[in-house]
Length: 274
View 1 (cartoon, one colour):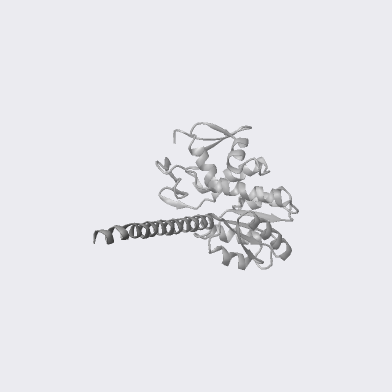
View 2: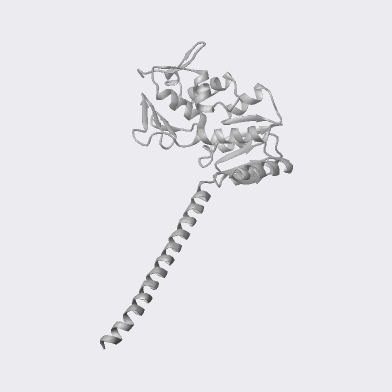
């Protein structure tokens, strides 16, 4: 019995050790595979979706190829009605041509900004139309940027990245409500209430208002607002800020529009004593 136990023990130990090693190796493989799945899943989750709207297929194909090479997901629409339908899936950005069959880009962005589920989606106009008047119209309707064709893909990618950077939720999660008299600004859910009524603001209008509201009593220059809200990569004019300030005042209403003061030749200031 003793001899039999002694002879069998090393064999049993060897089998046991190999079993443990195999089990550990299997566990390692499972954990490693799980980690890989998580990494891939996270990358997929982080990919931004961009809706491309243009009636020229070659332009769509060019944008799709280059944006997907940068890691973005893309969807394509060739007219205004299709764009509005696809926007219901809440893409992270819309690159929108002005001259479209059916509903043009102006009408598309009007409807986007009037619809609860799409009013906060950033929009970059991509069009052959030029001139300050067209740019002002686009900004008044709530566009985040305005790019004139033809434009290099490198510049377009830079504008896209700037738009995502500027529209990323980077506002504080605590103490997120700013109040100035009847005006209540919630920086968590990007909402503004005036006299307890919810008022719709575009993304850029909201960001300009918040930037001023976080610095009550301080004069903020136009250049500062352009650099902080739009970024150095975007070429816009001083008129851009004036358009947004005017729209913000209109939405604050007659009783609160004087909350934002114009400092002639310098910029704007949000009154600290309101």
